[in-house]
Each structure stands twice: as structure tokens, then as C-alpha cells.
Amino acid sequence: MTGRSRPQPGRNCRSQEFSSTMLDLKYIRNNLDAVRTMLKARNNPLDLDAFQALDQRRLALLGEVEGLKNRRNTCSEEIARMKRDKADASAEIAAMRDISRRIKELDAEIAEVENQLYEIVYLIPNLPHTSVPVGSSEEDNRFVREWGEKPAFSFTPASHWDLGEKLNILDFERGAKITGARFTLYRDLGAKLERALINFMLDLHTGAHGYTEILPPFIVNRASMTGTGQLPKFADDLFKLEGLDYYLIPTAEVPVTNIYQNEILGRGELPCCFAAYTPCFRKEAGSYGRDTRGLIRQHQFNKVELVKFAEPESSYEELEKLLNNAETVLQKLNLHYRVVNLCTGDLGFSAAKTYDIEVWLPGQGVYREISSCSNFEDFQARRANIRYRPKAGGKTRFVHTLNGSGLAVGRTLVAILENCQTEDGEIIIPEALRPYLGGREKISA
RNA sequence: GGAGAGAUGGCCGAGUCGGCUGAAGGCGCUCGCCUGCUAAGCGAGUAUGUGGGGAAACCUGCAUCGAGGGUUCGAAUCCCUCUCUCUCCGCCA
Image 1: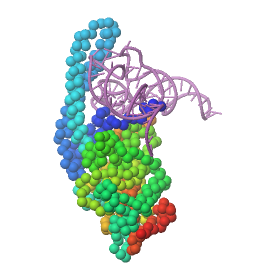
Image 2: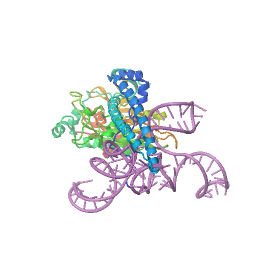
Image 3: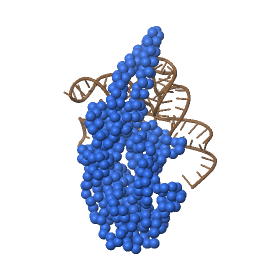
Image 4: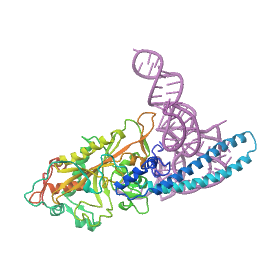
């Protein structure tokens, strides 16, 4: 085995033909107005006039150069034949010299035009699904359902940061000393509770829910970041390794979705479902002053992520299942939550549709996102070039990719502290978690 | 970190002095035939992307033999750079 069977990472999708990138080029060309309307619904100021000009220029150049290449190919054959027959081909060779030079010029020009075109097309977000409500901000997100109810307290519930510090299981000051703001030290039962949650979630998803467990690299290259849509647009939110084109992952979505980058899956392999625990690293640029206290917004946090590759026909059913799988975690922990369907203005760049699960946090009196479950349709699959063959010998198609948190572990810990607190500042551990904590029933100071 | 070897289609594996090689051969797979079932056998087909023609079957231009660049009328084949894989040595969790 010489190791040549795996596709090469390292190169990203922009080298080959244009096809395998973001929205289909032909689609944009033929539906310019629809794309413009979509951009508007997403509050995206991108201007497509430049796209149009570059696209037309590219097609014209391509037509010219392909004609010349055709001539070159046929003439080369002719020259080969003449040489074999010992005829003099110097006149033909001289003529071809000019054509070759011209081809080289045109190719360079096309490369330049395509680069400019890429810069635009890579910034066009995905088209929202028809079931996505149109709206400008999170105010317009549509309520889908809720589960359980807000716990009643006979006292004013404390925030998780107060509880965590009093119980000596979360140490924000020392976290900041060791690294800086938005880093937290977990200790003793805080650390154990976090680890219990990770194991509980992984066991649930890889058991009853049928996902395959993955432990991926926590550092990825540029091609992977581009494949899932973090690059080029969101470079500011990523931690980049100095001197390398490597990045710390902001979510397991990146390494796990790229498992099949540049591959063609066989029939019968879909849907395939992965569950992965990873830490996640985010710069949180642009959120200065927001959620500065507590565990809600950290530069490093743990997450169990669910990722699916599905056939286009069933991807929305798979989204519902994935959402249910994530909800099950909260139900088993007996935590009240609601589900919302994100509106066009709140939808992420790569997503066609997203459900957020928001857990109730009594310490702060708000619902906070604890999971985000999205169908990307073929947006990521185009960028990462992930296809499948519906039937043997048939044409390939792009798969649909989906993912969702199942769940954000730190925020789950927050929810447990705030929802399961007693008047004495103790935490009653949810029953589902007790086997993971040696049967322990509560955390007390 | 030092020394060497390699990268070709779903897989294995040819590719000689650069030119009828988009790629032999085998395996696998698909369809058809055949055998009472199974095994074996026979025939045909079987890379990807993109453009054009056609209702379709299909025909056809261009590109792709790890990636990028160079030489040449012409490159899987020659040259350079990079990436990855493997082997040996050193170091290390």
C-alpha cells in the first residue's frame, strides 16, 4: 500500500473547474435577480454587477482558447504523423509556435479573471430554504415548539458564575490569569461534570441514536476551512497557527464534514452520521463587552457535534431527526427549552435552514442558544467536492451536509447549575448523569 | 531532524527513445445470456468536470495520470518547487 488511494488534501477546490464551488455558477448566472433578492433578505450588501461582467468575460475567453487548443491538438497529431512518415513538418511547427504563445496568454488572462470571480462567488451565502421565515433580525425567528417548563423557585435563582465560584468548581480569575479573558479553569466536580456530560452525550448519540463516533484533528488546513465556509469570509473569528496555513477548529463541523472532501461516496453509504467531541476555539471578534461574565462565551469550549451526509431527497427529514437527537439530550437532563426556526436575517452564511435550540437559564432569566442544527444542502458539498453515486454507473451528485450541536457542553453545564440549584446553593445532579459521576446526587460546597 | 523510495481510473497494476494512451492487463461492479439452486462460464458496458448538438439513446469540443510551474509544435512520460505516503536512523508524548 503506497498510500495513494486517499484524495490529496492541501489543494483546495479552486484549482479544478469552477463547478465545484459554492453556489453553482450557472445557477447564479441564470438567476441573478433571485440571488440579489436573497442577498437582500440576508442583509448582505454584496454587489453582483462585477460578477456579471467577469462571468461574461470568462466565457468569451474560454470560447476563444478552447478553439485554439482544439487546433493545437489536431495539428500536433498531424505533425506526429508527418514525422513518422519522415516528411518535413517545420512549417507546421512554426505556425503552431504562434498559436501556443497565444494560448499561454489567454490562459493567464482566464486565470486572472477566474481569481477575481472566485473572490466574489466565495462570498455569496447559501440560498435559504422556502420554509425559512423572511426577517431582518432574531426578533423575526419563528417559534417552533417548547419542551418542559420553567422551574419554579421560591428564591431568586443565582447565576452560574456565582454558583460555580461558591462551589469552587469554576475559577474564572485563575483562568484569566493563566491565559486571558474568556478562559476558565474547571476544577474538581466542575471538571468531572463537564467530562460526564461529554460522555453522556457521546454514549447517547452513538448508542440509541446510531451515530458513529469520530475523534478528529483539532487543527485543520485552509482547504478544510474553505470547504465548510469559514474561509475566506470569517478569517477574523479563527485562531491561526503562526507561520502555518493551519487553524484551530471553531467547531467539529469542519474536520468531520471534510472527512469526505474530494470523494465520491458509493450508493448505500448515505445517510452517514457522525458524532464527535472536540474543543472549539473562537476569537469572538466583534463581541467585546457581550457575555463577559461566566461560561457563556469562551474562546475555548467543548462541544459534541452531530454531522450527517444525506441524499438531497431526504436531507430535510434528516434535519428533523438530527434536531430531535439534540433535543433528547436536554429532555434526558430534564432541562426546559424551546426551538426556533431562524429567519433569513439571522441565518448563517452556509446554511439553508437552521433550528436553534434555546435552553432556559433562570439565573439570567433568558433563553440561550445551546444547539444550532442546520441543513447546508449542497453548499458545503460543492465547496468541499463531496459527491455520491445514486446508482452504480450513474451520474454523481453532490450530497447534502447537515450538522448540529448535540450539545454545547459548557452551556449545558451552565443550564444544569442554574436550573438544578437549591436555596442552599447546592446542585441536584440530573439522574441521567449520575452514573457518570459515580452515583453522586448533588454538588455541595 | 538525517537518509532513501513512491504518488496513474472503484481497487490492483502497465506505460519502452516525449507523439494514434483518457490511458494496456487484471479484479471489482452493472446489464444480458447460460446453468434446476450455488460455483464456474460467455457477451457488452464501466473515470471526473465543463461547454456545444439532440426529445432521448447518444454524438462532440476542452481539461484532468498527487498539486503548482517550466521546456516543447506536442508531456502521464523530461526539468523545478511543493504536498502527502512508505522504509531506515535520531529525538520525543
